[in-house]
Length: 628
Ligand code: FEO
Ligand code: CA
Ligand code: CA
Ligand code: CA
Image: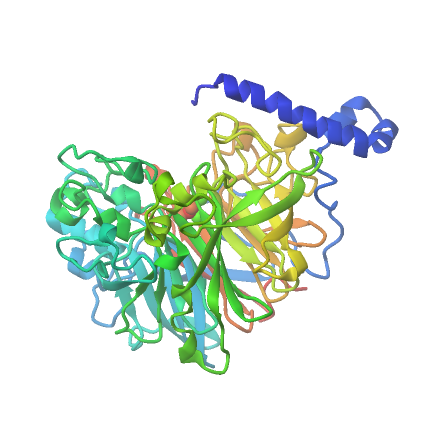
């Protein structure tokens, strides 16, 4: 448990006063006409921030399902969900079948572990490619010894289970299946050749003995969520890269390391014990070469992935790319850590739909910004601004410890603090509504809110210790994603109305039938339905009673209504979503079923060990996913 500080005790009542002040003014009539004072204070105080849910049957056409604690994937009536591919399945015709005892060589030819973000790219009526992140490794299942006794080959196996699996698909009897003979099948791992590009490439702090120019790097890992470009490439986002580094020695690590959580112990992967590249004493600049967004061409298995340094270095969640009305490319980027920030990149040059090759390096030049949220009259909405992170501007100067634009990008977190960016409750995925340019971001939870001095309770992060998470939405001024200004509100505050009243019960669109915690993956389909995936507590007791296993829900962005569509197996997270262009097949990810040795045998059943899997969802009537 985190110990409460004096600060927290000061912050919470102060903010409650603000809310109540706002309420008293706005809702005086409604309150006084309520049946009782208890009823008034029992209701969520957020109704003015969020439209009360209306009937969404025109947009959401399935019947909601109940919460579940079963060890399987359950989907709404009229839908079917089955496994497309799981960790350790062969990705090539000559690759060995799944075995827990597979060595590093076998793993390099098999689907990676812990699939997360993914994108479906259609090539023809019956051919497509699915690019899938393999975020991290569960050593308790990756090895029979559960990671307790790592050999050099075990480290290599773990490295080969990270990265990206590019999976060619073919349509067989109307269903998308893995094509083991596909020319595009590819594994990208922690050891694949990559380039560093953009303003930070070649900087002294990116140089190592193995790469004296600071432009070539091996591999990508902790690939969390994703993005895609209109020019047909895949964006994979490096998140908890810090945990792979460690040291047997005690090198001095300044704030450039500690701000990113880099320490000599690491997160227990043990890579530094057999691979000097991950030993901080031997290769102090190697961690600066990770924590980027990487662009991959899934159509060319020989292409070299590019780490796009213009998008900044932090614990990237996803990369929500949209082409602005005037052609500039805008990418929204969350940094998933308690009290970190929300970013935006705007390209220097415009997207050219008529000349695909001209767009290939659009993500190398542009401007990075970070968000500042302002409150309005104590309400849970307000205005906001994007503050430029450019060397020489906004205090990003030598006097404040920045020597170049490269340093601003490599240490983007430090730059964000320098300009006074708002600390957030763990920004996870961002998604842009294709219908109206509104942008949504999941703030998954934050036990430090109102506890740590730099994370005071505020309008956009309104709950102390935020155990359930919420979703913020912003509207760019003039529907222009390059504008410096926006208005924001809260689309949803998760909570448990069967256990709590007030803020902890959640917003009005949360009820006993759709409650969940820790929204994480989000994405829109073509019709503007918002799909929400959870990575939360699945104890199903106490604060989380009635929520069951992690799940996926569907939200109506206009009415606010939220319906549960899918529930996952024991101790999993649901993450990653993509659609075939006809919107008749949806792929989602079941990640880490049975984590921490919880009793899951998904998907193989019996006494098998659990495996992360990509799930294919279709309608039994062949219709559009989510529609009526
Ligand atoms: Fe990999 Fe923030 O989730
Ligand atoms: Ca996530
Ligand atoms: Ca998460
Ligand atoms: Ca995860």
